[in-house]
Length: 545
Image (cartoon, rainbow, N blue to C red; front, side):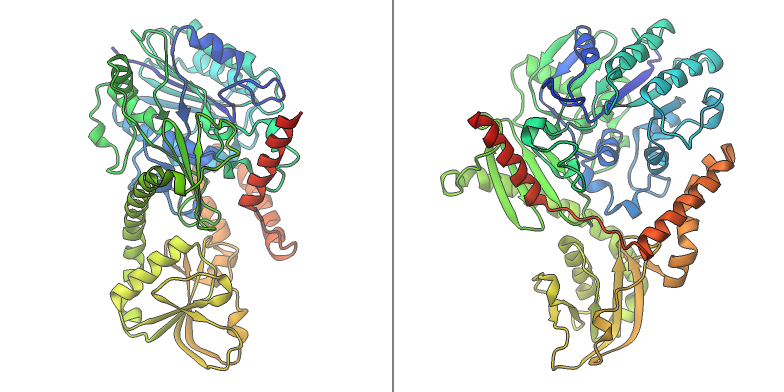
């Protein structure tokens, strides 16, 4: 039997109700639960829409997906294999209806967004689509294009500022019912991540300039999760699961060999989870949640087991352990000395993970560094003059040292990083520095120039500056400033072919970015621990009332 596949995702909905804001679990979800399997302990792979979507549709923990957003691609040359690409090979038609223009563009090779021909009259990719719009697009799809049964649908709703979100999710489900695409379909109803409860003090006002995607408390990482498929018996499942389990579950239900997925896919078919819980042999699984990609600052890694949560603040090199059963609000970290065995077990899991993740990313970066192998082999001193995430810096230093053990690598002392392979550069030091090469390494390769603060020191001599992105791909800084910002938009060519006016829209957007970068000097700042302290303080105050 050909099974339609339907994903209905509501952005940033919690797994519970508070009655205090627009992020509560929807009535439509409780209604859907009557005919589906509810997984009561489901977690996102990342409290970020972009990262969560990637994990959901690849079966891969978000830390493996990419090193940074400049490296965010899911094309034929990528090592990441998506559910949509597998289904396309199986003859499925893909109909992804995402409300966000930014997400449609960023994830276009992952979710394969709708082409213009499927949109109702008056609709444009240039627009943000409301929840009502999503239902109109879906209804038009059935009226004007008659999708075959072998179809994949994804609808991405947004609960923010829309009191009728639940109504439109219901309407969406009714459209599938009306067109006989309900009973025989594989349907996921879920959220990409949760949202901090207002009682935590982290609300729309206090979160301005911070971002909820840096929070790993239960309210933000636990998600509502429902699954319906032909023959499924409605029930509630308590076993821990992750949204990386979605893709393997679809493959299992379609009898597609899961070996087709990437080697580092860690998702588990929920059919196995169901059988294990029914038989009383559920595993003590550990779910990983990441707030950032490898080459980004302020990374936090959370490991969640049945009873505990282990949190690693990477940049601060700080660990916390919480008893989730007895400290549901996560305000009292457990004492290290009293829980050494538990902490050591989590630390062991984390080390295995980090080794595997670093090895994966190291292999990708190694390919690019080897393109300048001869330069490194002839170098005695190399200066890396940009501030880099520590894990990325360690990988780069290791590869350079493997190529030439005699190369001395310098890095500014002011960045407060200690790595055995790296010597510290002290600005305005009495010592003269003579470098063969200066490596200027930036995350983005557009609107990008090297910071020459350290190179203005007259005691610093160097032969040449080489410019790289975080993947260690070499680039030209003049092209980077004037041509690459436009060249990167080539990825949107399908949108421009469908709607030529979008090119003008993006050129205006590009001009604004240029002004922000060079004239307004805008820079995002976020204090991880400050946000955590703000939340803890509000929770404790709430308890005193």
